[in-house]
Length: 462
Image (tube, rainbow, N blue to C red; front, side, top):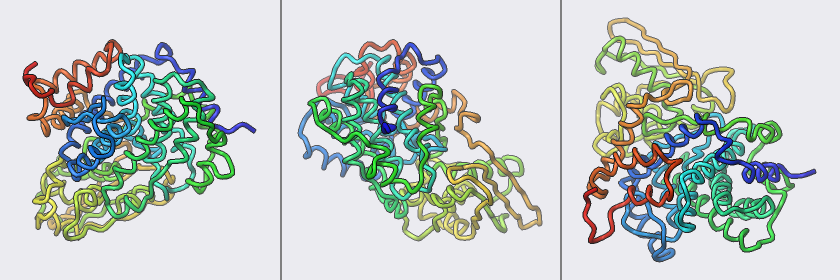
C-alpha cells in the first residue's frame, strides 16, 4: 500500500498557476502581504535581536534578506529568522480547523529559495505558497486528536518543503525524498506553548530551516524514507494519537486551503478572538465602564480552552499573556481594543487590567469538536443588575467574516510603522503596490528588498 506522501508529492508537482482560481490568487496576495507586515513588526519583537546575533554566527553572510534587517544570511538561517518574526507576536494567519499557521514557515522558505535561485517570478511564488499551504493544512486536518507535539511547527516543515521543492522543480521521487529528510528533522513540543516560551516561534523557525536543507539533500540525490506519513514509525503514528489522512489527501487540488485561512485582527492567540469580539460588541452596544463590571464569564470550546485557558499571573511575559484569554479580555475591557502596545511591560503591569483578569471566569462549552475555535460567548453582569450576553460564531478574520480591505491595509501599515525608521521612505505603500500585482512581478527579490533597510550608502528615498 502506497504511503499518502506519494499523493502529496504528486499534487505539488502537478499544480500550475494557470489552474488556480482568481479568488485563490487574490487571497494569496492578501495573506502574503499580511505575513510580510507581521514579519516586519516581528523585527521589534521579544527576543528578536538576540536571535539575530546568534544567527549571524551560524552561517556568516549569504544572499537572503530578513524582514526589517540589514544583515544578509544563508537561506536556511534567513528562513528561520523570518518564520520566527512572523510568529513571535501571535499576529499571523492560520487555518482554524487544522490549527496550523500555514504561511508562517511556507512563505519564508519560499522567499529564501527564490532569492538563492534568482529570477523567480511572482507567479511561481504564488504556486509555491499555495501548494505549501495545501500540504501544511493537510497534515493538520488529517489529525483526529488534540496536539501534544506543536503541530504548527511540524506541519510548516512539510509545507515549506513542498514550497521549496516546487520552486526547485523537484520531481515526485525527489520530493518524497525531501519530505523524508524534513520528517527526520521534525521537532516541536506543546510545552513551549504551555509555558509561553520564545521556543514556540523558534519551533516554526527550526522546521522552516530544516525544509530548505531537506530539499538541498534531496536535489543532491539523498536516499530517504518513503513511508513518511503512514509508516510504522511515520508522522501520524509518532506525532498524532489519531489520524485519518484519506479524505484530506483525496481533497488535494479540489479545495485550496489558503482560501480557508483566517487573518488575525488582534496580536494574540486565535482562540482568544471569539470572546474578545463578543466583549467588543457588548461594549459598543451598551457602553459600560470597567468599574461597572460585577462578573465576567467567557465560554469557549474545549480546544480553545486548552490553548488559552491559562491563569493570569504576576510578572508574566508577553508571550504568555498573548495566550492568556483572561488577560486579553481584561485588557479589552479596560482599553476598548487590543494592539501590540497591550503586550508591553507597562500594560502587562497595569493594576486595573490585572484586577479584572483575576476575576474573569472561563468555562468550556459542551459538545464542541476537538478542532473547533467556535462558537464562543461572553456574559457580563453589571453593578446596576443588568446581565449582558453575546455569542460569536465566526470570529473576525475568518473567511466567512473577513477583515475589510481598509482594516487589512491598516493592519499592514501599522506593522510597518514599527520599523518605519529602518525602511526606505514609502516602503509600506510600495510593498502594497508590489504584492498587489504579485503575479506580474518578474523577480520576487524586489519584494524582499522593499521589506529590508536600504544597503549602506544608498538613500532612503524612493
